[in-house]
Length: 144
Length: 78
Image 1 (tube, rainbow over the protein chains, first blue to last red):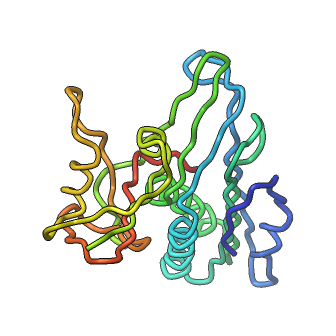
Image 2 (cartoon, chains in turn purple, red):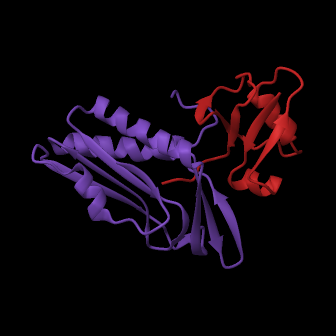
Image 3 (tube, each protein chain N blue to C red):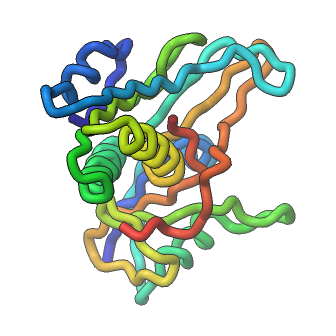
């Protein structure tokens, strides 16, 4: 399951999408909006997506995960629009036969999402705003 | 020929619009179109990735009539 949503993410829905009897490990990662950056107080976050391409890239990440870690299942939901401080902007659930694969796949999925999925974040402060760039970004095109 | 250009995030704010049709009179690479639409300033050009029809392409990708082009500024998802 891959989705963009303008409403609060229901973690149980993401977890349920990967739960199954064969899985010995279910790992749910939440990316949560921080309340500060470089000493400035963040009032809110605004996420914007190139929706069709973002969902295609998220689907490609899920396909890659299932190829790299056979037996793993993955689901991911990303917020767009205004996200309040302390809420999840992204939730990724992975299930796998064993925990090693679940941890590895989850880590790879969020790292790849930050480098390749066309979503942008504006941090809004009391006295201004900034488009934040992920450290994972490079201007080399991903290979898919 | 025409291509359809989409603008996002900081580039959307610079252009003041989300999309527009652009007429090309000769074969044009996606990187050349970016330089034409966003001329580099003294501090250089904002680094971007390029997408055509919702897939990443390299900077030397030559555009075709009817393509949807997007310049992908530094990402902030996650």
